[in-house]
Length: 47
Image (cartoon, rainbow, N blue to C red; front, side, top):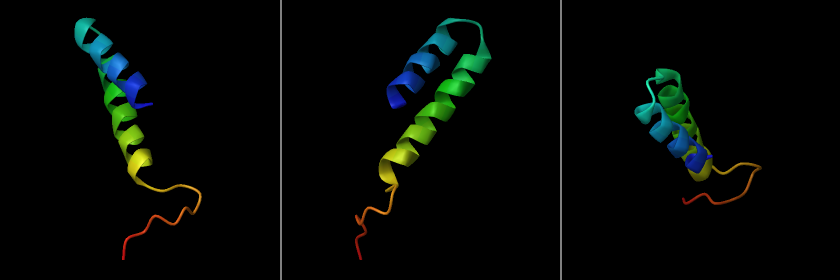
């Protein structure tokens, strides 16, 4: 998801369409959040 976001971000910067840049930024942020937040109850908590 992060790679797709980077591709859309680069395309959005090269092409004069700001919607691609916006979608790219959103995908990068969501990908990073999902990467650092454990999903499915995996116990990677540090006390």
